[in-house]
Image 1 (cartoon, rainbow, N blue to C red):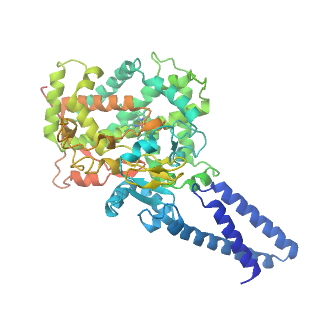
Image 2: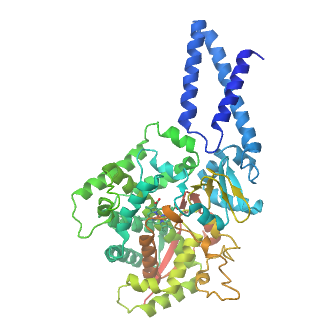
Length: 546
Ligand code: HEM
């Protein structure tokens, strides 16, 4: 072997040992020295001979040798010498993050992880070179308790530049931003939020009455409701989607982003490269929507503070104030997490309720007993209704809007689970809601929509036969980064379910030429980071008497 080729192999081996530990070095630290080394080699060869042909051959040989050696070393290390090598999982996943990213692109990542846990009979499986999936509740507090470092997935939201509360990894600023956001959901604010929520739900009920007995495209209807709600409550902005005159660009853009986001979210190196490329037109359009909302808001004086008003106040503890760019980032993330999640959860809940008419009847009875015919459903009373609470909890168990959850980075020193598995420091770990909550050992008859499981009394002897471990219910996440809008989300879900079930009987459409199969529909739910559902038409039959 020529001395030149041998030297390149030695360089490749040295570089490999420098960059291989978990966490791997950033893409910039790979790419910049690589380009610089090529430039130096080019200048050196040029100084030896100005004839281009004698330069390109050794350049190509050097690059080919370097890349081939690096790829071979990386493959062998990831398969046999990585601290994660002993965890079971597909070999292709251990070698490259592309496997998991592709599963996410196809919308089946969390379903696949669940199947892999079963296939390998293991609580810990390897789903990427430095990534693990865990289906054991013991991991929740150990990983997500305290000030844990969030994983790289959510960094996909700040590719166009700028952070928001859902992307920030710095605990000091994140804490301040969360305190600022929390002011929008205090006890004192809830009545104002509920009052405005009721107006939008009134309109939904009216629309369903107008369409009573005819098929209603639920995804579309609840998208319109959820976006109108978040635009109004967060930014005092009239969405007008339920009225039919609104602009649905935000919804179309968000639906369009999801497949891309779930793919790129699993490829941190690609995320870093994309930061250097121009923002695509759709991204610019979404950013402009944020600008427009912010500009329109500045001219307003809403009678009660909305979420954006709260976001403009300083954090009392640190004095931190959000800049215009931070506010724009928050408008965008609130649109993404605050509406789509509510809309898909509602649609799934109504489909599940259509599959259980007896639960609807029970719920209607509970609602009628709690309210006079004309009384407004107040949030205090709603919170006391046990079956309503059970329906919403069970809906969130089966159909969480973030099926795969968000990853955490294992802290320094690593973590040992009660299974004896040791998770090495810096590993990126997913404890997905779907893999946890669809497990028989935590929720017996896990694939069935059973609100009654939340009504069962725990007995001292046998416990609750339908809930083995409540800790496996984490649809809002857990710990410092858990959902910032949980209070509003629960209020909205409960109020909509209560109003609609009280007024209508919900059924599947009986179309003999296109028979509807509920189980197939549930099987078609996709996990594109946020849940994506297939179209579903339900029929809302108006109840004449309560
Ligand atoms: C069905 C309704 C909803 C569910 C199940 C849900 C669930 C979640 C989950 C699982 C996370 C990630 C938590 C983590 O990383 O550990 C999250 C984050 C977040 N959600 Fe929700 N969400 C819902 C609705 C809402 C609404 C209506 C808002 C209103 C503004 C909202 C605001 C947020 C924010 C700001 C974050 C980022 C929190 C942070 O990283 O600190 N969510 N949500």
